[in-house]
Image (cartoon, rainbow, N blue to C red; front, side, top):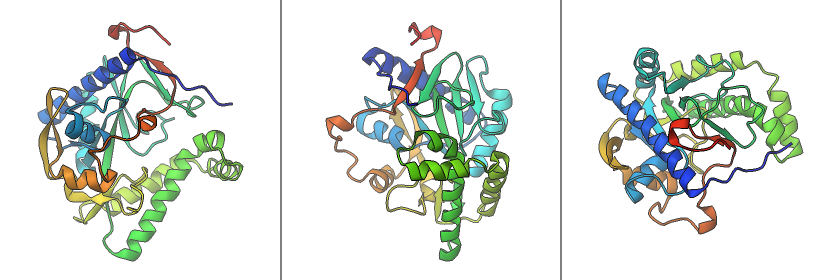
Length: 282
């Protein structure tokens, strides 16, 4: 059974964006206090460059950290994070969480992507925190590494794909994949993390997230290391210093707005802003 898409009003979308901005400010505070290097990436960086803030129709935020910085951030969140408002989520803090990267969740809120209503993991407005892992330089190892990433990503996604994928064949495959224990899958993912740690390779990637079309090995790793402040919604946050190369690599002609029918965020089935945003439950 498929849920209908919730349509944000203009006011709701802006309030959502301001909640996300509050979460980014909190992440920035923690990172600066603990000398943890991170940068805004993807659509968030594109919004900073093209709009000096959110892409007008965007409903999420993306930041990235190298693996070592990510592990430090995860650790300091146990004592530094404002846990009255936020929750750091990954498979170690939420046993039902299925993705191979972390999120900050806003408590007292709801935000559920279409196709994920049946999952048991904690919900809420979220900011994605992507660890960047090293990809082997040696081509045969790099190909095997990429194949392993693909397999693990599909196993983790299987609980969604088995219900939501439009293809009967793919749903059948996902139903088989979801029988693989999640705990075992995360152990294999940890092995991939450890494999490429601190070798100083050329490429880096989010192991359980798709790479851009035609870029199977990920991104130039130095982009996530050489950062510079950039304005976003009146604040200064670290972003990829060579943003033109990065955004061109990821989006192509990134300064050209997409057609109007492509100007939308992610499909959501359930949404509720925190009470202090003066929004009604939906």
